[in-house]
Image 1: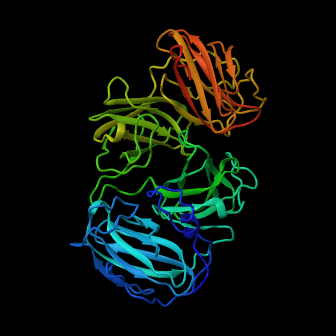
Image 2 (image 1 turned 60 degrees about the vertical axis):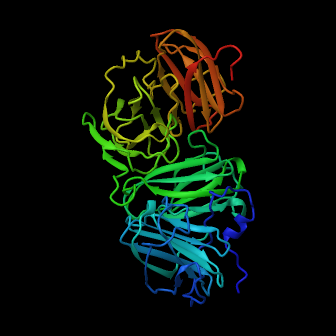
Length: 544
């Protein structure tokens, strides 16, 4: 028997992940020879042993629910298990073609899940690519999404991954991949928090169809995720998604067949176990057989659209009231001209609306406007850029809604800029966290606390609803600086570090109806993503 051990054995020995943090096999790009399968199914399997390239037919109808794979909400439906024992080390492709919404999972001989997939090219297909070890017995489980049952055809084939040196393995849509960077090498140094010498893993992804894809890393450490071209050219990078140090996410529009690499790294050299998933935000219908589409489509200025989140899937988790696993609809909006836009949702339930740019950064979010059934964001957007408009629900609420995008006709014209370069990113509202990034921006304002000339900045317009003391907090992925200006662009206050170098905070008495400007920039020449929040000053004794 080969002495080679898959990556899963090294991860499981850590003993530090919760049970839900199921592990999937990584591995290098070695190609396997076509093995001869030996062995028989276990008594509880319900299916026989699988052989290379042999198609087998099965059914989950009338069978017991004996397994709960980690993808596709499979609890409740019948399932069937087959055994597979390769005779050679190598990469293998497991594929199910069914007459229902099938789920496919592969487990090691210790019962740990190595890979799981709900939808392949269609809802009725599922596929898993894994590097396996000769002589070890694996369980291949065929289940159904949300208790779906039916007949299926299953096949396993040896496959040559054709992966270049340094690439860990192949990533496919909706396959849960878990690994640990503790055994990696320094292949790439992402520009959003990683440092030279930091261990990383590189995965290869080929887009099966044109669309918007989300790459999400959930880790036990402060993770970084980056997307590059196959040539190594940087496409996108994220350190802390939504202000969470253990979640990193990038979203990117890809052409059919486009090959990219997903880099999992750590902030300032950190490393550990992680879970990586690639999700197609543009194509799949969710919610079981016959369910409504989770992607709404394209929305244009002045044309209201109707939809429902009932029975949908969770693609985004807005920061202002939505919970994880809350169903949402995703609409695409591409402004033909730069300007400030009003995105409004009128719903039959407690809706949440948020806007995300192509980098996967949340631009704006709102839960309740004038009532729980109304949500609205007003935000400055760039011409020709595609944004995702996410209609979600407060704490998992679902229902029907009406979405409309239009120009913001209520905003007063801004005061004349002191220079031609002074341009706002939009309006920031009280108690509504606003996420953005200064990466790739321009230097429009020079502030008085430790920001070097040439450092990019964002400028946000602020008008408060009543006179009082306010605080303006920036929580960033980098060493941030925040400044407050009056309507004539005179600096009122400026701060570099608050508690940590990543946070900056200014406090000031503000007057109702007067226009102020909030400048977000970086210490010296640092830049990255951030979350900006304006709130009333806490009462004495409650100051953070």
